[in-house]
Length: 401
Ligand code: ACO
Image (cartoon, rainbow, N blue to C red):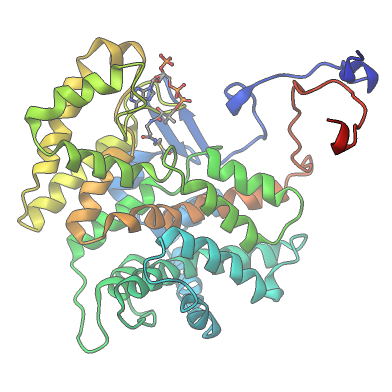
């Protein structure tokens, strides 16, 4: 028996780190997280200050360019983004190839990937100007793509963008407006939606961002790289958790049943987990969850709605915060715990939740992708592996096995 690793001289040193819990894959100046303290900074600015005072467009500029824009710079950025909101008309035909009941994330993966077939003038990644145009296109077109996915699923006609509206107002109109009627953007809802986008804009080297970087490290087409990020985000352990969290809260349904679900989450023989709880990096309260909780209350008040699911969520949080299992394992509500309640109140079906996350995270993805491509130390990403398979053996014909 030959040890195959010795045979191929593979006894060199490397780190075996499943899930990359202690391996940095890059240097980055975009986002800082202190998971123990519950701190999240974008380019040095605390997330709660950005959520309170900024707009999604301003945060997008900040992430892409490194500093908050001056008034004129923001106006120009806004104008540029609004000039890229249209989709090529041929893409409307592409939508019609999907089943009506397709998950919006399936459509998002397909349509964003398909953009790579349309914009040949912004795919020379060695040219910073072309990279910027590709980034602007992606940020600008995501609301149109997500709104069209929604319209397609409910059988309504697509709405063209109205560039006189804000980024978020335009998205709300394309989603909830109908061609025959005028649509008034509710400023409270617009602000809440914008805030949700800010809270999801970037989160350093999470799974989907790492996917975008890894795909982009080979020099791949930027639109295809973002489609890869969308595919990764879809999973229930990542962006799909907001959908899963609301479904779980609805299933619990009544504060009286919370204890039963908490017991299940603690049971080692039950695969059930409290969705919207726990985080790879935050071992303290996710700072985004705090803002999200306040926004949920504000939106329900504005819409004069009372949602029993909010009561269940708040009670569940309180029970978990005082439970030894959750304290010991440092499991706190994450950004996804309250976001579903807001999105549901605004009128989005749960299937759209992760698509909205993808829309917002596109800003972080393109900022991280640009940073990676412009890094002189950038190399193709190529993780090592610890081989545990068969040792070398000779082929035996099927008749003799
Ligand atoms: N409910 C119950 N127990 C949990 C939960 C939970 N939500 N999350 C973690 N645990 C337990 C695990 O069973 C494990 O216990 P053990 O040490 O006895 O084996 C321990 O806490 C550590 O959990 P890991 O899965 O090893 O932690 P990891 O950092 O790999 O996972 C994750 C983080 C995936 C977010 C996890 O907490 C989870 O599955 N949460 C629910 C899904 C969710 O809300 N995802 C959204 C994340 S935020 C985002 O993507 C935007």
